[in-house]
Length: 47
Image (tube, rainbow, N blue to C red; front, side):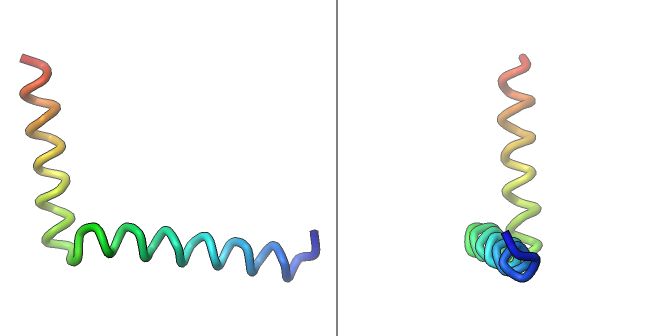
């Protein structure tokens, strides 16, 4: 694969991941709430 094709593939992948994660949380504050919920579930499961 050419270098320019590799760069384009990495750029497209990074853009897709960024869009996926930012659309799920909306804001950094929303991301904090998501992480907190995951922590609560882990804590509850360990009891």
